[in-house]
Length: 105
Image 1 (cartoon, rainbow, N blue to C red):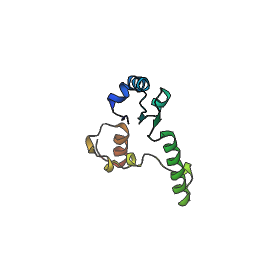
Image 2 (image 1 turned 120 degrees about the horizontal axis):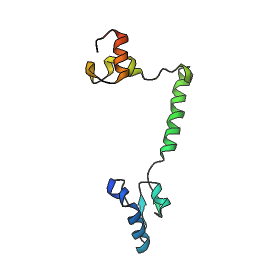
Image 3 (image 1 turned 90 degrees about the horizontal axis):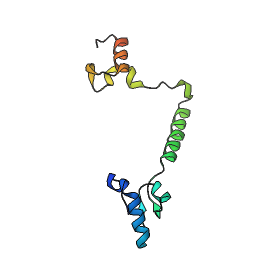
Image 4 (image 1 turned 60 degrees about the vertical axis):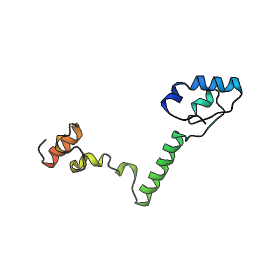
């Protein structure tokens, strides 16, 4: 089993080539290693994970009777007290939210 650490990612082509030369089956954490010649991969598919997240969020919204256009994004930006950096935060959105709230910053 080949891990997903920086060393293994950087030397993946060499690992795959040597494993193939010596006839050693390898299981990789990255799907791209299979395209390079590795035997199998044991990681997750991020595209599928994002797709499933979208389905679950859609179900939650539907359960509350909400449509996507009714969802307000960046709720933490509209609530400057949630920002962990406090009044010294340099992010423009936090500064504008504090200004709307009447805070100095």
